[in-house]
Length: 108
Image 1 (cartoon, rainbow, N blue to C red):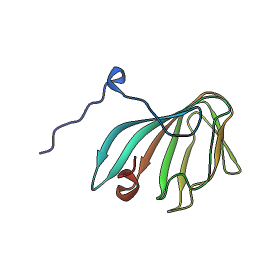
Image 2 (cartoon, helix red, strand yellow; image 1 turned 120 degrees about the vertical axis):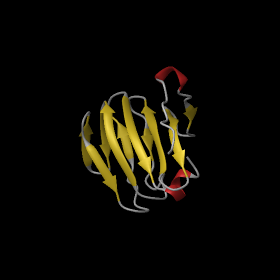
Image 3 (cartoon, rainbow, N blue to C red; image 1 turned 180 degrees about the horizontal axis):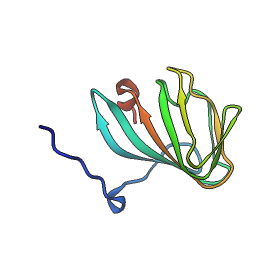
Image 4 (spheres, rainbow, N blue to C red; image 1 turned 90 degrees about the vertical axis):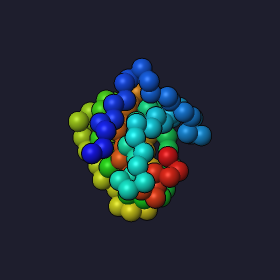
């Protein structure tokens, strides 16, 4: 049996992504299932299309985001196709919960 993994909020390490106003925190990484993490974006922060090379599942925890041509707010969910990650911009300070597949997780 596998042990339960708990990541306490005060143990999360935020790392810069190379994109101004955007930070990433890895919550869990697994070679079989991929990675789960948090993306924190300051209001106005932008990321380019193609930032993730695999598919992504994105849940907006807080904030207001433009992702591609769609507008997402807290509680909204998005799945991107493999290799087709759209551009985005935070309309407000935002927090996203993101899950990526195994091969994209290696870079996370």
